[in-house]
Structures are given as C-alpha cells and as structure tokens.
Figure 1 (cartoon, one colour):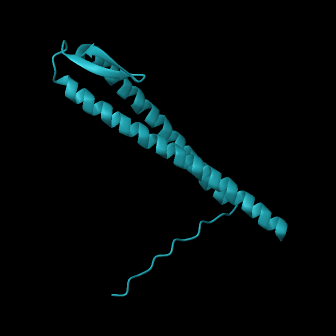
Figure 2 (cartoon, one colour):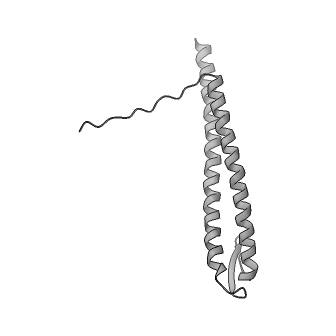
Figure 3 (cartoon, helix red, strand yellow):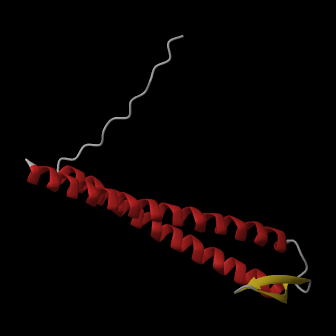
Amino acid sequence: EADNQANAAALVGQLQELKTEAQAIAQKIGELDQERVEHTLVAETLSGLDGSRKCYRMIGGVLTERTVAEVLPAIKENMTKLEGICDELHEKLLGKEKEMQAFQAKHNIREPQKRTIASAE
C-alpha cells in the first residue's frame, strides 16, 4: 500500500513537471509574441517615413542613431525570426501536450474534475 502511494506520488510529480515545462513554453510564446507585436507597430510607423530620416534604435542596451532606411530592414528581419521561433515553440508546446496526454493514458491518471457551484437564484 505504502509502495503504491509512493509510486503514485512519483507519477503525479512527473506529470506536474511536464505541466511546468508546458507552462514555461507557453509563457515564452507570450513574451515573444508581444515582442513581435511591438516590432510590427514600429515597422508600420517607420514605413511611412522618409528613409533618410534619423531614428534611434536600442541595441544591447545602447541607444544608437541610425536612419529609417537602415533600421526598417533589420526590424522586419527580426519580426520574421520572431515568427519562426514562435512557430517552433508552438510545435514544441503541442508535442509537450501530447506527451502529457500519453503519460496520463499510460499510467491511468485522471485529473480531478473542477466543481462548479450553481447559483440558486
């Protein structure tokens, strides 16, 4: 009996670890997606400006003076890279979710149902 409980606790611990990994991936996706949105806004703003106009760009914590023509292609390239990374992370997240489902099925682990309290009006 005690051995069974220890084994069950270990399995639940492993499942929780998988959930934590999935949450970390989802959080990173959210951060990168927000960064991509910011890049999009900057690119849209700069697109309407003259290419020789001065603009400032933060590179590694240092504010540098450049022209719109220099900065815009770099921002668009960063947007493309961010989209690619987000796509990769989405695939990784789907894989992690499938891994969790397979783990639960293999070890016959069912999550407790969330109870809802019906209001009596």
